[in-house]
Amino acid sequence: MQNDPLSHGLWECSAPPPPTTAALTGDAMADVAVVGAGYTGLSAALHLAEAGATVAVLEGAEIGFGGSGRNVGLVNAGMWVMPDRLPAELGPVYGPRLLDLLGDAPAAVFDLVRRHRIDCEAEHRGTLHCAAGRGGLEELRERARQWQARGAPVELLDAADTARLTGTRTYAGALLDRRAGTIQPLAYARGLAAAAMAAGARIHTGSPVTAAVDEGTAWRLHTPGGSVRAPWVIVATNACPAGPWPQVRAELVHLPYFNMATPPLDAELQRTILPERQGAWDTNAVLSSFRFDRAGRLVFGSVGALRGGGRAIHEGWGRRALARLFPALRGTVFETQWYGWIGMTANHLPRFHRLARRVVGFSGYNGRGIAPGTVFGRCLAQHLSGSLPDSALPLPVTDPQPARWRAAREAWYEVGAQIAHAAGARF
Ligand SMILES: Cc1cc2nc3c(=O)[nH]c(=O)nc-3n(C[C@H](O)[C@H](O)[C@H](O)COP(=O)(O)OP(=O)(O)OC[C@H]3O[C@@H](n4cnc5c(N)ncnc54)[C@H](O)[C@@H]3O)c2cc1C
Image 1 (cartoon, rainbow, N blue to C red):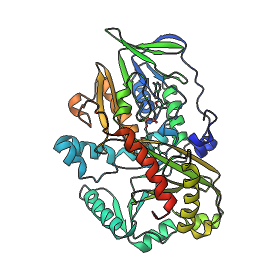
Image 2 (tube, helix red, strand yellow):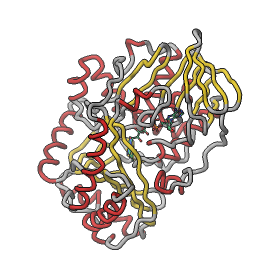
Image 3 (cartoon, protein in one colour):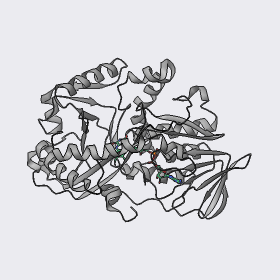
Image 4 (cartoon, rainbow, N blue to C red):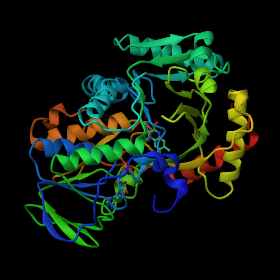
């Protein structure tokens, strides 16, 4: 995207083309202006347009330019943190409510894919959270217990079943979550955009919002080519710099994450590695993830930014780590590589903000944005349409809190991943 092969990599090569869009020119009006064309903004636009609202989406770059076009494609249920952390952090009302919403969120994604016939390599076959050693297994045992207490269809697998479902004997066990699955992330974003446009939403790409002016009864959002006047604004910029609302980005600490894809593997290897096509990741602090795309390429990822000296370090580690996991892949060269920035909050839970009168947004998905972004976008549409009052929102309204030591922590994540991968011990 934007001639940078390291921004969206394989997903840019294999996604169906985006719907035709153009930059905003002149002055326009809408019921709702949405800033950002990732899952959150596009899902909000789709559900608002379906409810009869006029919607203008303003995207600074291209559809899926942020995390939505770069991620691993694991459509997960819940958050990174243990399920019990949600009620502990958010209390007895919001905690269970958010857990229910996020537990059902993958189903919402796969329903949308079916309903709008989105061609995004959707595989609703579960995910495998793989245990690194005994510590990892204990963590997963507790995670399974907490989800099962809530009736979730998760299953703790032993080492033998994990080896059968992953194709590697590296792991002590795994948590199989049948609610989850995988998609081609950029294809999903483009499909959501096409569905939103078919429902009547207007999407303007190449239209960064540079200023927001409160005109009393409505906001006027300015872009280089024109403006949109709308009574309601949704800020759906997550970890990207957000123009007039820098406080959204300032709350999030960037964690870099990269992916590398092999060429399509031969049929025999595809029968032994992830034979049932779950997506997988592990419990290591500097975690790894792996999944297939539709063509049989193995997409292998971990923490790190593919820039400066980090690129060679992570690439070298990727080759070694892949060979350790799957000795048959020794010597495999990655065809494509790409990376992006995950937005982390202090307590690893997302936020709902009212940034000004009639300016709202969710952010801070902590690496879990496909399903949450989709359902939070739907919540925003319901909230603005009047069917989801403040009291029924999945999160309390909070003010953005600037992340402490943000620059230092971001530098540490980037350098720390290089140290871990240069040492090669973290696997
Ligand atoms: C490498 C990586 C791997 C990940 N893996 C997973 C995974 O496997 N599973 C999962 O669930 N989540 C994963 N995530 C997280 C997930 O991708 C994000 O949480 C999700 O995409 C956020 O969606 P969003 O719509 O809120 O924001 P984004 O997709 O980031 O979209 C924000 C958009 O806002 C635009 N924008 C910013 N400023 C302006 C402005 N001033 N005017 C107009 N437009 C603006 C940006 O160009 C961008 O397109 C991963 C993230 C990364 C980076």
